[in-house]
Image 1 (cartoon, each protein chain N blue to C red):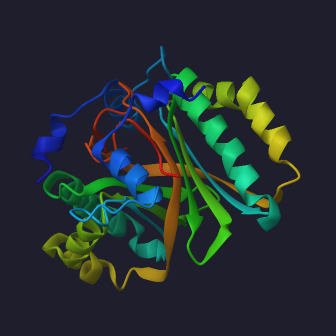
Image 2 (image 1 turned 180 degrees about the horizontal axis):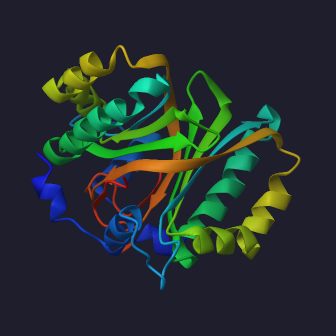
Length: 143
Length: 143
């Protein structure tokens, strides 16, 4: 069952195998994707404005930062003021560069008064399964 | 700033525009991606076994189901028995087909005694930004 996947090997997958088998990879010690989750509660009165700033920041990040692989944002149907972010970076230096970027700082400052609560969750990826699709395209702003 | 993204238009994006502008799309009324989040707490003694079953189910789903676009699984660093899933389906019928599939049912039955708690969160996607990367490849099982 796993045979087809053994053929799909990117640079990271190779590095991960070496790393996990205990062999040193001196030239790229941290080439593991960084996945961060964020749970936000937004002031309902500023929801539209918040989403506009978030969209601009996410689009800029995906476009200009090679190490920003994925930025997903969803609202909970049960309470649309609750926003969940799923963020994937190529490695820890890509993550550091993102946090230091002008567009991220602009987002952070611009939305400070809109965010009622924020929980950041550091994670250890278990599996990251995705595929191209005509439905999804490379980038979709849903609304 | 948004100009480059206007060039990246998949089938879904077009349909979404029509739908959101209030124009009917009779041939494909529900061609919007379905994003579901799951928050699980796993019995620590059965963690490895749970992850093995989850990996097999996710790999099979991505491989054999055209409408299963993304299955991400991460463990919280603060408590690795807490697993978060991010699931994206091409549309609601893809989601229904996944839930009815033999491999999903096998996962559900096989892990029932391992899952101490499960919260399913239905969501409304705001933005789904991703791009290809040599780092990520098409499919990566991290560990």
